[in-house]
Amino acid sequence: YDPVLYNVPEGSYASNPNNGSRIKEFREMISALHKKKLGVVMDVVFNHTLGSGPENPKSVLDKCVPGYYHRRAEDGSYEHSTCANNTATERYMMGRLVCDSVLHWVTQYQVDGFRFDLMGHIPLKVMRKVRDLLDSLRLDMHGIDGRKIMLYGEGWEFGEVANGQRGQVAVQQQLAGSKIGAFNDRIRDSTLGGSPFTDPRLQSFATGLLKPITGGPDQGSVRDQETRLRKAQDTIRISLAGSLKEFSFQNFHGETRQGDQHFNEALAYTDQPVEAINYVSAHDNETLFDNSVWKMPPGCFSPTERMRGNWLATSLVALAHGVPFFHAGDELLRSKSLDRDSYNSGDWFNVLDFSGE
Image (cartoon, rainbow, N blue to C red):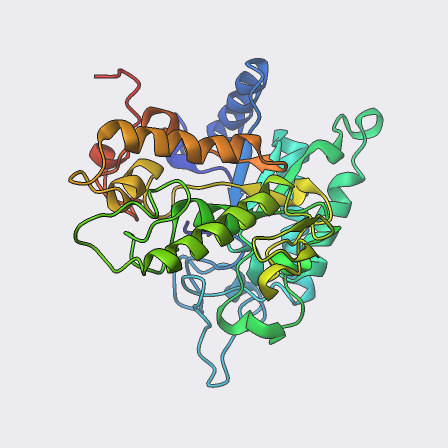
C-alpha cells in the first residue's frame, strides 16, 4: 500500500532483490498459476504515493515535475483523504501513467485483472480509457484477449472529490454502461446490518434481526425491526438481480418501481451485472465470522445459528447476478479475533488455517 515505483515487481519476494530475479520470478509465478487454471488480479493503488516533495527518498513523481502529479488543497498542502499524498489523476500525464501501467502489467506479465483501490478518486474518463485500451487487445495481434481482463474497484466518493469537486469520478452511480465493476455495499449492509461506520452489533437479514437479545445497542421496536428487515429484503432482491437500474419489482410498500428508484436511495446502479461486485466481507473490516460474533452474541445465539448465518450470507453472494467476491477463509468460518484492520497484526491474526483443528 506504499506505492513508489508503479511498474516494478516488489523485490522483497524475489530470491535476489538486487538483480532481474524479481521480473523473471514474477512472470514464472503467473505462468505457474495459469497452468493451474487460476487467474491473477493485481491490487493497484494509483490514488496516492508513499512519498512527495523534493527531499523525501521515497518521492518519485514529485521530483520529476514538482507540484504536478499530486493534488493540493487551497492552502498548498497535499491532499491526504485516501491515505497520504493524493495523486492528481485528473491531470493528463498522471492519467496517462495509470493507463500505461495497466497495459504494462498485462502485456509484460499476463495479469488477468485489476482491483483499483479507492477507484472513486480517479476520474471516470481515465477508468473508461483503461477499459477501452484493454478491450482493444486482441488474441491474434497481442496474444491477449483484453475483453476478458477484469476491471473493478472501490467506488466510494469522499474527500476532495466528493460532489464533483474535481470533475466526474469513477463512483458507483457513474459506472452504468462502463463494464467496470464496483463493490456492492448494498448487499453487504442489508445482509449483515449496519455498516463499517456504525455499531458493529447492528443486525439485519442474515444476523438475527427480530430475535430478542439481551444487551447491545437498541435495535428498535419490533415494528421498526420489521420495517428494516423488509427494506433489507428488497435491497437484497435488487442485488440478486445484478443491481440493474431497470429491474422493476414491487417493494414491501406495494409500489412497483425500477431498481434505482426504490426508497429514493438509488440502490441499483448498473446497466449490466458485471458492474456489480457482490460481497459481504473483504480484507478491510471484520471477517464474516467475526461480524456474526458481534451481531449474534454467544449468550443469545448458538454456534450452529452463527454458522447458518454465515452460510446464508455467502449463499446470497454466490447466487446473485454479478461478480461474486469471497474473502479468503469465509468458507472456514475464519476469524481474526475481531481485528478489523490487520495489515500489520502478524500471522497469528492473518494466517489461513486449513487444518480444521
